[in-house]
Image (tube, rainbow, N blue to C red):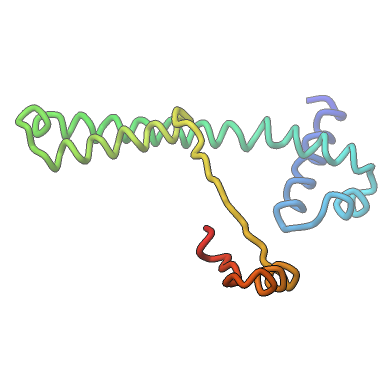
Length: 136
């Protein structure tokens, strides 16, 4: 391997290890004597070359395990065993999550802020003050 590639790989590993330890990127750059943008490129290189393949391998292994579970459950499913069917469904849900097949869950938050002005207006109008908890 040419020297530049070795040095680049070593830098990427050093950046990753320092980031993993919790150091901010600017501190990593200073400690290694390179620019922050060089550190960011090295970090991205490490992720693409090392971390992503490991994540893909782990995902593949987990999917294979789920397949084995389904094969083992199949005779019981064919007999109509309700517990086996429920387990198969849970396996399917896990598979969907691993593969990113599920749509994101939409979360809606409502926030009501009642301040002293709102309370004074309600008092002047002869109304009960607004309860922010009741609005949610």
